[in-house]
Length: 290
Image 1 (cartoon, rainbow, N blue to C red):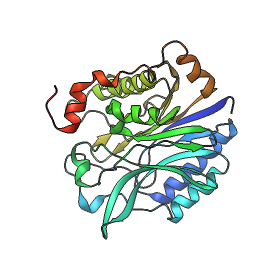
Image 2: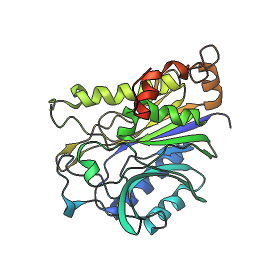
Image 3: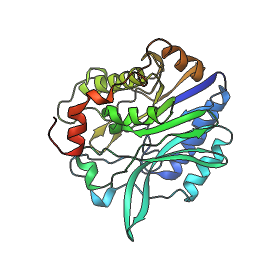
């Protein structure tokens, strides 16, 4: 595949879906102009995120869409030969009942390449969204990818599962806010700002993969989003990033070459020792460790 230009987006997307589509069109045009082949938009690109994480208002939720919705199809058409990842609130029937999922899609002009329903739901998000059930990598024109959605990256097992499934690029779409319990006067000093960056770099380094992290910016209800979109190399080094304001972080990298280089001497996936992780196995099985 060779050298690829990757773009990670920090931008604000609210409830106004037509406005979001116009904004996406402009972002894709800007990314195409600088040769981006993989573009990652934030979580909740179409319809915005929740406005309150503790007590979500049932009357003010994002609109539920499906993969076949005209809005999603329009983004795929905009993508053309570019690989674009976006987030939305997915409405689906589960056992005959309508349910909502916080979902990420990876699309090109030819359709949907991969999808992920957020597995780990923080705070009040569990009152709105059902949980996804798995992490699975998939093949794309820019290599094998894995998708995560914000809080998923807090759990090392999520990223590790995708890396073990062959993903060499992990894409994490976020609507990650500043702390709602211990607010700092400036976003760069916020506790969640530090954690957001820490998780991005740690997940890349421990799995020796390219990590692409997007995020919302601005304010939605009582939430203030961090921005800080970035591309991280397989050694945990930040190759490009934005600030807390909107922007496009662009990095150029030969994924296959850089991942192989990172794993040449120390290969973290191959050198794991699962037999030693007894407490983890026991906890997962609900039995005491031997």
